[in-house]
Length: 407
Picture 1: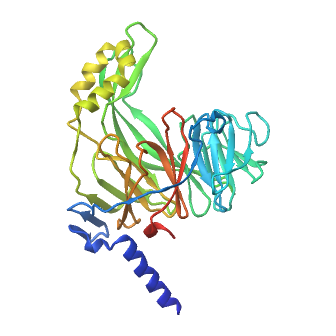
Picture 2 (picture 1 turned 180 degrees about the vertical axis):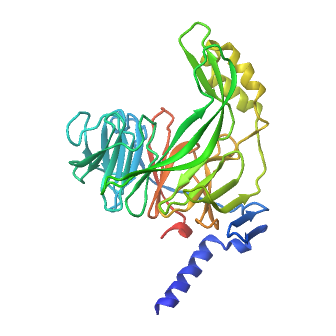
Picture 3 (picture 1 turned 180 degrees about the horizontal axis):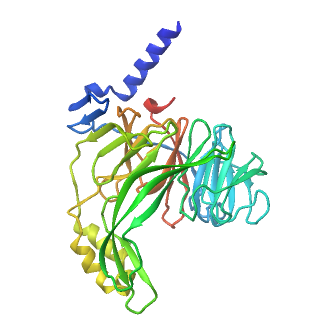
Protein backbone atom coordinates (compact mmCIF):
# COMPACT_ATOMS: atom_id res chain seq x y z
CA UNK A 1 0.00 0.00 0.00
CA UNK A 2 1.48 3.38 -0.98
CA UNK A 3 1.73 6.38 1.35
CA UNK A 4 -1.26 8.21 -0.17
CA UNK A 5 -3.48 5.15 0.25
CA UNK A 6 -2.40 4.76 3.86
CA UNK A 7 -3.22 8.40 4.62
CA UNK A 8 -6.67 8.09 3.02
CA UNK A 9 -7.36 4.87 4.93
CA UNK A 10 -6.32 6.47 8.23
CA UNK A 11 -8.55 9.48 7.56
CA UNK A 12 -11.48 7.18 6.73
CA UNK A 13 -11.01 5.20 9.94
CA UNK A 14 -10.84 8.40 12.00
CA UNK A 15 -14.09 9.73 10.49
CA UNK A 16 -15.78 6.36 11.03
CA UNK A 17 -14.78 6.34 14.69
CA UNK A 18 -15.51 9.93 15.55
CA UNK A 19 -18.20 11.01 13.12
CA UNK A 20 -18.10 13.63 10.40
CA UNK A 21 -19.21 17.06 11.66
CA UNK A 22 -21.07 17.58 8.38
CA UNK A 23 -23.48 14.82 9.40
CA UNK A 24 -24.36 16.53 12.71
CA UNK A 25 -27.73 18.30 12.39
CA UNK A 26 -27.35 22.05 12.67
CA UNK A 27 -23.60 22.03 11.96
CA UNK A 28 -22.21 24.94 9.97
CA UNK A 29 -18.76 26.30 9.23
CA UNK A 30 -18.32 29.75 7.71
CA UNK A 31 -15.25 31.86 6.97
CA UNK A 32 -15.55 35.66 7.08
CA UNK A 33 -13.64 37.92 4.66
CA UNK A 34 -11.09 38.65 7.40
CA UNK A 35 -10.37 34.94 7.76
CA UNK A 36 -12.22 34.41 11.03
CA UNK A 37 -13.96 31.04 11.13
CA UNK A 38 -17.33 30.50 12.82
CA UNK A 39 -18.21 26.91 13.74
CA UNK A 40 -21.74 26.37 15.03
CA UNK A 41 -23.73 23.37 16.25
CA UNK A 42 -27.14 25.03 16.27
CA UNK A 43 -29.01 21.84 17.14
CA UNK A 44 -26.58 20.67 19.78
CA UNK A 45 -24.37 17.59 19.61
CA UNK A 46 -25.25 13.92 19.07
CA UNK A 47 -26.38 12.20 22.28
CA UNK A 48 -24.16 9.14 21.76
CA UNK A 49 -21.40 8.86 24.34
CA UNK A 50 -18.39 6.68 25.05
CA UNK A 51 -18.23 5.76 28.74
CA UNK A 52 -14.69 5.34 30.04
CA UNK A 53 -13.82 2.01 31.61
CA UNK A 54 -11.38 2.05 34.52
CA UNK A 55 -8.16 0.13 33.90
CA UNK A 56 -6.21 1.05 37.03
CA UNK A 57 -6.89 2.81 40.33
CA UNK A 58 -4.00 4.15 42.42
CA UNK A 59 -4.28 5.51 45.95
CA UNK A 60 -7.96 4.90 46.59
CA UNK A 61 -8.78 4.09 50.21
CA UNK A 62 -9.92 0.52 50.66
CA UNK A 63 -8.50 -0.84 53.91
CA UNK A 64 -4.80 -0.06 53.91
CA UNK A 65 -4.14 3.64 54.49
CA UNK A 66 -0.45 3.22 53.59
CA UNK A 67 -1.35 3.26 49.89
CA UNK A 68 -3.20 6.60 49.85
CA UNK A 69 -1.72 10.00 49.09
CA UNK A 70 -1.58 12.64 51.78
CA UNK A 71 -2.35 15.41 49.26
CA UNK A 72 -2.18 14.37 45.60
CA UNK A 73 -1.64 17.61 43.74
CA UNK A 74 -0.49 16.74 40.19
CA UNK A 75 0.60 13.93 37.88
CA UNK A 76 2.79 13.56 34.79
CA UNK A 77 3.43 10.58 32.53
CA UNK A 78 6.79 9.82 30.90
CA UNK A 79 7.50 8.28 27.50
CA UNK A 80 7.44 4.78 28.97
CA UNK A 81 3.97 5.36 30.43
CA UNK A 82 5.18 5.57 34.03
CA UNK A 83 2.93 7.73 36.22
CA UNK A 84 4.65 10.36 38.36
CA UNK A 85 2.37 11.49 41.21
CA UNK A 86 3.22 14.57 43.26
CA UNK A 87 2.22 14.32 46.92
CA UNK A 88 2.26 17.91 48.20
CA UNK A 89 2.08 17.10 51.90
CA UNK A 90 4.64 14.31 51.80
CA UNK A 91 6.95 16.37 49.54
CA UNK A 92 7.72 13.44 47.27
CA UNK A 93 7.00 12.10 43.80
CA UNK A 94 5.73 8.53 43.75
CA UNK A 95 6.34 6.71 40.47
CA UNK A 96 4.11 3.87 39.24
CA UNK A 97 4.40 1.53 36.28
CA UNK A 98 1.66 1.65 33.59
CA UNK A 99 -0.15 -1.23 35.32
CA UNK A 100 -0.32 0.80 38.57
CA UNK A 101 2.30 -1.15 40.50
CA UNK A 102 4.82 0.91 42.52
CA UNK A 103 8.14 1.66 40.83
CA UNK A 104 10.16 4.14 42.89
CA UNK A 105 9.94 7.36 44.90
CA UNK A 106 11.71 10.59 44.01
CA UNK A 107 12.54 13.48 46.33
CA UNK A 108 11.91 14.24 49.95
CA UNK A 109 11.36 17.38 52.00
CA UNK A 110 14.49 19.47 52.37
CA UNK A 111 16.65 22.24 50.97
CA UNK A 112 19.28 20.17 49.18
CA UNK A 113 19.55 19.22 45.49
CA UNK A 114 16.50 17.24 44.33
CA UNK A 115 14.67 17.89 47.60
CA UNK A 116 11.24 19.56 47.68
CA UNK A 117 9.53 22.26 49.69
CA UNK A 118 5.90 22.95 48.74
CA UNK A 119 5.94 21.71 45.15
CA UNK A 120 2.59 22.10 43.36
CA UNK A 121 3.13 20.82 39.81
CA UNK A 122 4.95 18.47 37.42
CA UNK A 123 5.55 18.62 33.66
CA UNK A 124 7.67 16.64 31.24
CA UNK A 125 9.42 18.72 28.62
CA UNK A 126 9.74 17.51 25.00
CA UNK A 127 13.28 16.32 25.79
CA UNK A 128 12.06 14.12 28.66
CA UNK A 129 13.15 16.44 31.48
CA UNK A 130 10.85 16.34 34.51
CA UNK A 131 10.22 19.91 35.70
CA UNK A 132 8.90 20.49 39.22
CA UNK A 133 7.49 23.84 40.29
CA UNK A 134 8.34 24.62 43.92
CA UNK A 135 6.87 27.96 45.07
CA UNK A 136 8.38 27.61 48.54
CA UNK A 137 11.84 27.70 46.96
CA UNK A 138 10.70 30.08 44.19
CA UNK A 139 12.42 27.65 41.87
CA UNK A 140 11.81 25.25 39.00
CA UNK A 141 13.72 22.01 39.51
CA UNK A 142 14.81 19.88 36.54
CA UNK A 143 15.08 16.24 37.61
CA UNK A 144 16.71 13.25 35.98
CA UNK A 145 14.82 9.91 35.89
CA UNK A 146 16.52 8.84 39.13
CA UNK A 147 15.41 12.03 40.91
CA UNK A 148 18.80 13.72 40.96
CA UNK A 149 18.70 17.42 40.19
CA UNK A 150 20.04 18.51 36.82
CA UNK A 151 19.52 22.24 37.21
CA UNK A 152 17.20 24.80 38.76
CA UNK A 153 15.80 28.10 37.53
CA UNK A 154 13.84 30.92 39.22
CA UNK A 155 10.05 30.44 39.02
CA UNK A 156 8.07 31.97 36.18
CA UNK A 157 5.17 33.36 38.20
CA UNK A 158 5.73 34.85 41.66
CA UNK A 159 3.65 33.60 44.56
CA UNK A 160 1.76 30.42 45.41
CA UNK A 161 -1.01 28.61 43.58
CA UNK A 162 -2.91 25.41 44.27
CA UNK A 163 -1.65 23.80 41.05
CA UNK A 164 0.91 24.72 38.43
CA UNK A 165 -0.77 26.05 35.29
CA UNK A 166 2.24 25.95 32.96
CA UNK A 167 2.16 24.80 29.32
CA UNK A 168 5.37 23.65 27.63
CA UNK A 169 5.29 24.31 23.88
CA UNK A 170 6.78 22.19 21.11
CA UNK A 171 10.11 24.04 21.41
CA UNK A 172 10.35 23.42 25.17
CA UNK A 173 9.49 27.01 26.16
CA UNK A 174 7.31 27.29 29.29
CA UNK A 175 4.23 29.52 29.33
CA UNK A 176 2.32 30.26 32.52
CA UNK A 177 -0.89 32.30 32.88
CA UNK A 178 -0.92 35.15 35.35
CA UNK A 179 -3.08 38.19 36.03
CA UNK A 180 -2.17 41.66 37.22
CA UNK A 181 -4.74 43.49 39.35
CA UNK A 182 -5.79 46.83 37.92
CA UNK A 183 -8.58 48.16 40.14
CA UNK A 184 -11.46 47.29 42.43
CA UNK A 185 -9.83 45.17 45.12
CA UNK A 186 -8.24 47.73 47.40
CA UNK A 187 -8.68 47.01 51.10
CA UNK A 188 -11.57 49.00 52.56
CA UNK A 189 -12.53 47.79 56.02
CA UNK A 190 -15.77 49.79 55.95
CA UNK A 191 -17.07 48.22 52.74
CA UNK A 192 -19.67 45.49 52.62
CA UNK A 193 -21.39 44.18 49.51
CA UNK A 194 -20.75 43.27 45.89
CA UNK A 195 -17.61 44.78 44.41
CA UNK A 196 -16.31 44.76 40.85
CA UNK A 197 -12.68 44.80 39.81
CA UNK A 198 -10.53 44.31 36.76
CA UNK A 199 -7.23 42.65 36.02
CA UNK A 200 -5.13 42.08 32.94
CA UNK A 201 -4.52 38.49 31.90
CA UNK A 202 -0.94 37.74 30.94
CA UNK A 203 1.16 34.82 29.77
CA UNK A 204 4.70 34.77 31.12
CA UNK A 205 7.30 32.67 29.34
CA UNK A 206 10.67 31.12 30.13
CA UNK A 207 13.07 29.40 27.73
CA UNK A 208 14.97 26.97 30.00
CA UNK A 209 17.80 26.64 27.47
CA UNK A 210 18.64 30.33 27.03
CA UNK A 211 17.06 31.66 30.24
CA UNK A 212 15.14 34.25 28.19
CA UNK A 213 11.92 35.52 29.79
CA UNK A 214 9.04 37.42 28.24
CA UNK A 215 5.42 38.39 28.83
CA UNK A 216 2.45 38.76 26.50
CA UNK A 217 -0.45 41.03 27.41
CA UNK A 218 -3.90 39.57 27.19
CA UNK A 219 -7.46 40.73 27.62
CA UNK A 220 -8.94 42.77 30.46
CA UNK A 221 -10.84 40.50 32.86
CA UNK A 222 -13.76 41.76 34.98
CA UNK A 223 -14.44 40.15 38.37
CA UNK A 224 -17.41 40.38 40.73
CA UNK A 225 -17.16 39.29 44.34
CA UNK A 226 -18.69 39.88 47.76
CA UNK A 227 -16.60 41.74 50.32
CA UNK A 228 -17.22 42.22 54.04
CA UNK A 229 -15.41 42.82 57.29
CA UNK A 230 -15.82 40.31 60.11
CA UNK A 231 -18.09 42.01 62.69
CA UNK A 232 -15.86 40.90 65.55
CA UNK A 233 -12.67 41.98 63.82
CA UNK A 234 -10.02 39.77 62.32
CA UNK A 235 -9.87 41.22 58.84
CA UNK A 236 -11.87 41.24 55.65
CA UNK A 237 -13.29 38.39 53.61
CA UNK A 238 -13.86 38.07 49.86
CA UNK A 239 -16.38 35.50 48.64
CA UNK A 240 -17.03 34.39 45.09
CA UNK A 241 -20.58 34.75 43.81
CA UNK A 242 -22.27 31.33 44.04
CA UNK A 243 -23.09 29.53 40.80
CA UNK A 244 -21.45 32.24 38.72
CA UNK A 245 -19.28 31.43 35.72
CA UNK A 246 -15.52 31.19 35.57
CA UNK A 247 -13.25 32.64 32.92
CA UNK A 248 -11.65 30.21 30.46
CA UNK A 249 -8.14 31.02 29.25
CA UNK A 250 -6.12 28.13 27.83
CA UNK A 251 -2.91 28.10 25.79
CA UNK A 252 -1.97 25.11 23.64
CA UNK A 253 1.49 23.94 22.57
CA UNK A 254 1.28 25.92 19.31
CA UNK A 255 0.44 29.22 21.01
CA UNK A 256 -3.28 29.16 20.21
CA UNK A 257 -5.37 30.66 23.00
CA UNK A 258 -8.91 29.51 23.86
CA UNK A 259 -11.04 32.03 25.75
CA UNK A 260 -14.60 32.08 27.05
CA UNK A 261 -16.75 31.66 30.13
CA UNK A 262 -18.41 28.63 31.68
CA UNK A 263 -21.69 30.57 31.61
CA UNK A 264 -22.20 29.82 27.91
CA UNK A 265 -21.13 27.24 25.36
CA UNK A 266 -19.15 29.69 23.24
CA UNK A 267 -15.38 29.48 22.93
CA UNK A 268 -13.07 31.72 20.92
CA UNK A 269 -9.69 30.57 19.66
CA UNK A 270 -7.12 33.24 18.92
CA UNK A 271 -3.54 34.39 19.10
CA UNK A 272 -1.39 35.43 22.01
CA UNK A 273 -1.81 38.99 20.80
CA UNK A 274 -5.58 38.85 21.32
CA UNK A 275 -6.81 38.38 17.73
CA UNK A 276 -9.71 35.93 17.27
CA UNK A 277 -9.33 33.33 14.52
CA UNK A 278 -12.18 30.90 15.30
CA UNK A 279 -15.42 30.95 17.29
CA UNK A 280 -17.08 27.70 18.40
CA UNK A 281 -20.69 27.71 19.63
CA UNK A 282 -22.96 24.84 20.65
CA UNK A 283 -26.67 25.18 21.43
CA UNK A 284 -27.41 23.62 24.81
CA UNK A 285 -30.39 24.00 27.14
CA UNK A 286 -29.90 25.98 30.37
CA UNK A 287 -29.18 24.11 33.60
CA UNK A 288 -31.72 25.41 36.16
CA UNK A 289 -30.58 26.21 39.67
CA UNK A 290 -32.60 24.02 42.03
CA UNK A 291 -33.69 24.37 45.63
CA UNK A 292 -31.40 21.44 46.42
CA UNK A 293 -28.46 23.35 44.91
CA UNK A 294 -29.15 26.39 47.09
CA UNK A 295 -29.65 24.27 50.22
CA UNK A 296 -26.35 22.52 49.55
CA UNK A 297 -24.62 25.89 49.20
CA UNK A 298 -26.14 27.09 52.47
CA UNK A 299 -24.89 23.98 54.26
CA UNK A 300 -21.38 24.33 52.86
CA UNK A 301 -21.24 28.03 53.80
CA UNK A 302 -22.88 27.74 57.23
CA UNK A 303 -19.76 28.61 59.27
CA UNK A 304 -18.87 31.63 57.10
CA UNK A 305 -22.43 32.96 57.14
CA UNK A 306 -22.43 32.68 60.94
CA UNK A 307 -19.32 34.85 61.11
CA UNK A 308 -20.51 37.32 58.44
CA UNK A 309 -24.33 37.56 58.79
CA UNK A 310 -24.65 40.02 55.89
CA UNK A 311 -23.18 37.58 53.40
CA UNK A 312 -26.03 35.10 52.93
CA UNK A 313 -28.75 37.65 52.13
CA UNK A 314 -26.52 39.67 49.80
CA UNK A 315 -25.45 36.60 47.87
CA UNK A 316 -29.01 35.25 47.61
CA UNK A 317 -30.03 38.52 45.93
CA UNK A 318 -27.57 37.92 43.07
CA UNK A 319 -28.21 34.18 42.79
CA UNK A 320 -28.78 33.34 39.09
CA UNK A 321 -31.70 31.31 37.76
CA UNK A 322 -29.37 28.91 35.97
CA UNK A 323 -26.05 27.29 36.72
CA UNK A 324 -23.10 27.64 34.31
CA UNK A 325 -23.59 25.25 31.37
CA UNK A 326 -19.92 24.21 31.43
CA UNK A 327 -17.90 22.73 34.29
CA UNK A 328 -14.26 22.96 33.29
CA UNK A 329 -12.36 22.87 30.01
CA UNK A 330 -8.89 21.52 29.30
CA UNK A 331 -6.51 20.74 26.44
CA UNK A 332 -4.91 17.35 25.87
CA UNK A 333 -1.45 16.35 24.66
CA UNK A 334 -2.33 16.88 20.98
CA UNK A 335 -4.17 20.19 21.57
CA UNK A 336 -7.72 18.81 21.32
CA UNK A 337 -10.12 20.77 23.50
CA UNK A 338 -12.20 18.88 26.07
CA UNK A 339 -15.32 20.82 27.07
CA UNK A 340 -16.88 19.68 30.33
CA UNK A 341 -20.66 19.85 30.67
CA UNK A 342 -22.56 20.68 33.84
CA UNK A 343 -24.95 17.82 34.53
CA UNK A 344 -27.44 16.83 37.21
CA UNK A 345 -25.89 16.46 40.63
CA UNK A 346 -24.39 13.02 41.06
CA UNK A 347 -24.09 12.27 37.34
CA UNK A 348 -20.67 11.25 35.99
CA UNK A 349 -18.69 13.95 34.22
CA UNK A 350 -19.11 14.40 30.45
CA UNK A 351 -16.70 16.04 28.03
CA UNK A 352 -17.30 17.02 24.41
CA UNK A 353 -14.03 16.64 22.51
CA UNK A 354 -13.17 18.89 19.55
CA UNK A 355 -10.19 19.23 17.25
CA UNK A 356 -8.23 22.52 17.37
CA UNK A 357 -10.34 23.56 14.35
CA UNK A 358 -13.62 23.09 16.22
CA UNK A 359 -14.63 19.77 14.66
CA UNK A 360 -16.61 17.56 17.03
CA UNK A 361 -14.81 14.25 17.60
CA UNK A 362 -16.55 12.43 20.44
CA UNK A 363 -18.51 12.72 23.68
CA UNK A 364 -16.82 11.00 26.62
CA UNK A 365 -18.41 10.12 29.95
CA UNK A 366 -16.35 9.45 33.09
CA UNK A 367 -16.70 6.07 34.80
CA UNK A 368 -19.64 5.64 37.14
CA UNK A 369 -19.20 7.31 40.51
CA UNK A 370 -16.75 9.99 39.36
CA UNK A 371 -18.50 13.33 39.71
CA UNK A 372 -15.66 15.66 40.70
CA UNK A 373 -12.03 15.72 39.69
CA UNK A 374 -9.06 18.00 39.25
CA UNK A 375 -8.10 18.71 35.66
CA UNK A 376 -7.42 15.35 33.97
CA UNK A 377 -4.33 14.47 31.96
CA UNK A 378 -4.46 12.84 28.53
CA UNK A 379 -1.27 11.09 27.46
CA UNK A 380 -1.14 8.81 24.44
CA UNK A 381 -4.12 6.47 24.41
CA UNK A 382 -5.01 6.97 28.08
CA UNK A 383 -6.75 9.53 30.28
CA UNK A 384 -5.78 10.04 33.92
CA UNK A 385 -8.49 11.35 36.26
CA UNK A 386 -7.97 12.73 39.77
CA UNK A 387 -11.25 12.26 41.68
CA UNK A 388 -11.90 12.40 45.42
CA UNK A 389 -12.93 9.25 47.26
CA UNK A 390 -15.53 8.74 49.96
CA UNK A 391 -12.92 9.16 52.71
CA UNK A 392 -11.80 12.49 51.24
CA UNK A 393 -8.68 11.06 49.64
CA UNK A 394 -7.66 12.12 46.12
CA UNK A 395 -6.61 9.22 43.94
CA UNK A 396 -5.77 8.31 40.32
CA UNK A 397 -8.08 6.60 37.83
CA UNK A 398 -6.54 5.42 34.57
CA UNK A 399 -8.82 4.67 31.60
CA UNK A 400 -8.28 3.96 27.93
CA UNK A 401 -9.54 6.54 25.46
CA UNK A 402 -12.37 5.57 23.08
CA UNK A 403 -11.15 4.08 19.82
CA UNK A 404 -11.79 7.25 17.83
CA UNK A 405 -9.52 9.32 20.07
CA UNK A 406 -6.58 6.93 20.15
CA UNK A 407 -3.51 7.64 18.08
